[in-house]
Image (cartoon, rainbow, N blue to C red; front, side, top):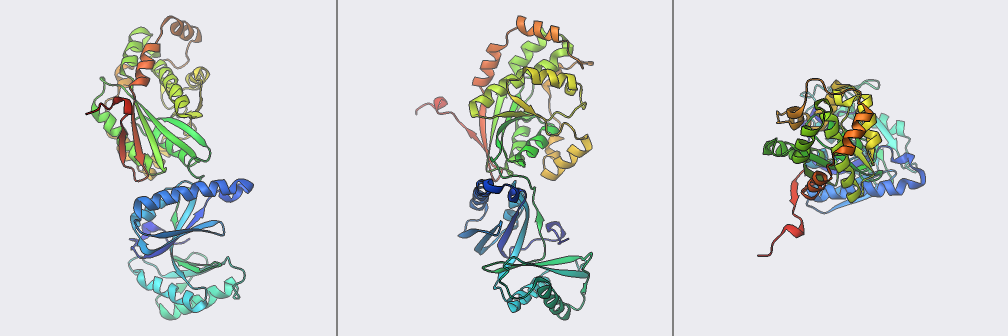
Length: 421
C-alpha cells in the first residue's frame, strides 16, 4: 500500500496530479459520456480552487492535471471528493528516461521526513503504460530500488509489506513518480444516472443517503421541510450547514426549504394521534413529488433505515410507497446505525447532525405511534380531509438556495419578488 495523505502534511510542491477513475472503464461504448461528465466536474473544481493556467489531459484511461503553479492541499483534498474518482496521485512529472526517473524518486524521498513518519522499508512499483519504453517494468524497479538503497542508507527493501511504496508510471509523453495516493469516493460521475430529490432532515441518516446517491452518479437536489413557527431559525441554519457539507461532492447543489408548519398543525389536529408521524411523511412525499416533477427529478431519496424508528416499519414504508406518485429510494435502509454514523463521520456531516435542534415531529409525536397502519382508516381520513390548500401554499412559499462546489450557500431570490427601486 502507498502512504496516504493522512500520514503527513502535504506540501504545495506538486505541479502534476494523476486522477484514476473508478467504474468508468466498465462502460463500453458509453464510456466517453462518463469521462466527459467527470472532466466537467474537474474543470469546475479547478476554477474554484486553482486560479492559474492549467492543462487537463486524458491519458490511457486516466486524467492528468498539470500547471506551472503548484496545486494547493485544499484543492487536492477537494478533488478527492468528486464522484467517479478511485484515487488521486500527486506526482512529479519527468522525462521518460532512467536518469530523470531515478533523480525524481530520490528527491521525493529526501523531501519526506522519513524518520518522523517511521518509514524504514520501501518498495518500487513500475507501471510501463507506454509499452514502447525499452526497459521492462521489473528492471526499472530493480535499478531504481538499488539507487535508492545507495542514497538512503537507512531504508531497506520490503516487497511484501513496505512502509512506503514508490510508484512509477511510464506514460507515452512523460513519466510520473509518486510516493502516496489519496483515496477517492469512487462510484460514477455527477449527473450521469439522473436527477433525484432528497428529503433532508437535521439528523444523521438523510445526509448519508444523499451522499450515497451522489456517488452513484445522481444529480442530488435537497428539500427540507421547515416546521416554522414550531421550530426556530437555528433549525434552518443547521440545514444550511449540512447542505454546505454535501455540496462539495457535486458541481452545484440546489436546496429547497418548504414551510411545512401550517400543514403539520392542521394534520395534527384532525387525525388520530398515533397516525400523525405517518401522515406527516405522506404529505411531505406529496409535496416533494410535486417539486420533483417541477425540477425534472425522477425519484425521491429518504434516510429511512428499516425498523430504526416506528415510522420506518416495513408496513409504514409500504403504505408511503403505495401512495407516492414518485419512486422512493432508501439507500441506508439495510445499514445498522453504527454503519450510518461511520459514513457520516467520513463525509463530515456527523458533527453538524448531532447538534441539538427543535423538532416539530417530536413536538406532535405520541408515545405509541402506529406500526401497522389500518388502510381503511387511512383511506377514510384522506377522503374526508383535504390538505390541498396547505400543500399549494407550502409549494408557493418555498425558498431556494444554491450550494457551490466550494460549499458556499447562496439564496436565490425569484425575479417576481424583486421590486423595482
